[in-house]
Length: 436
Image (cartoon, rainbow, N blue to C red; front, side, top):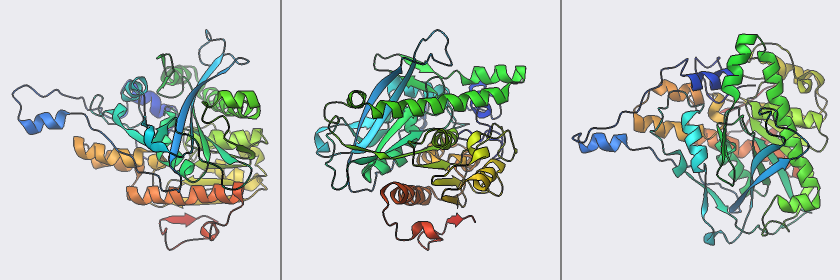
């Protein structure tokens, strides 16, 4: 389990440690925003304005719609806040849409989420107050009517879980791409884990993990905290599946335009980055409803370093009998990461291990598109970017993920031909290494 950016070198990617260090200002100097004086030159005042960002547009044949929902698990007290008798989640549903022109593009982060992300984010070294996180618009249109299914019983469904400390929207480029390819993608915010979760009534719940991590370090209970963090995420994903299975609950998950949209609940996949990838694979191990899962650089053990051999999760110790994709940063594969090696050894289902050469841990998030322009505009050191997303060209990193992750789910959930892309190295994507 790991977090979205390195704070003390590429190997130091502890899932909770980096989040806690970011919150406490430890591990890397945090530049402070300095207001330009009234008499400063125009260029200096312009430089002090907050950076606004854009994301890559999806490339699939469908425009994308989105709706967000509050889900309440009445049977489960919140595991992080004892005073809350029920577990509350926010989810965003991305789906193939039509007639999107009349519907506005959704924000990547709501104002409360943006403020929380500005205070506690995994982009170590980005100064607070200098990026307008609330200004970014996705290519998903709020409340647009769903597209009609062209063939088959319904749209396949994917669950997405982000890295620890990250909002569900930090995987927007990939989730919007998958929706544009004909998937319904349910992006799950893990409340009190992500930096900030904003609910429909305006309430914003912020992460409790930095303080939990500090306490665990003091008490020597970090492994227990890592176990709990993953278990909560898996329970969240399985609860969403429960909601999908009940017809009346399925309608509650979507607004009126979405209620009649057919879903193929025999074709459910899960994927995520970092701890989200761990949760996706662990959820597949625990729940037969998940038919395939992709892990984007998430370690499958309760450790703070990728190369630490244990203690292993049950998905690594037992293996799985359904298709798995692991896609790691440069240097991470089932020969170098012990928990991945255990998964390979103990699994009987199809397994695919890919490495994106030149990548780093946060390459598999929107950091790939966000960090380079932030660093350029704010004059931040190049090392901040390469520690987080590596040296691979951002456009190529996005292209690789858009090619291989949909191809994996197309093959395993839709049984569609991927023209051999997953069978071996491709001249179109020389940055991708197949690990035997």
